[in-house]
Image 1 (tube, helix red, strand yellow):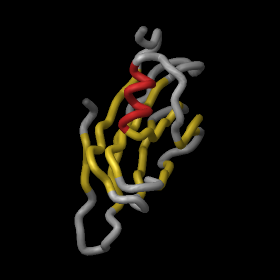
Image 2: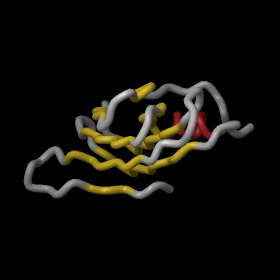
Image 3: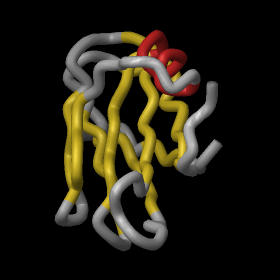
Image 4: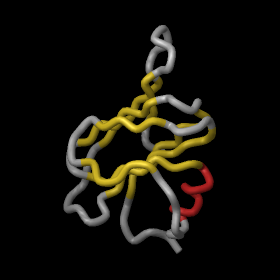
Length: 104
């Protein structure tokens, strides 16, 4: 069973624990940082765990808790309209440029 609401998905691929994700939004939206396994549960409208919640300000920063494959979902469930979003990963080492990801 799929969700009845639309969402924007960012596949962050493999990331190191401690990396910081900066999410910029044009409106209030739900922001969910999920492991790969939890994203699979989310896609099938099953109970899942995530970091984040309702983002009332922008940008917001979330820290990846452990190394692995991570996803960010931006959705408007419970909020009117649509939010434009962008994501960048703040590098752990200052000499590396920030990675940018487009919506999948």
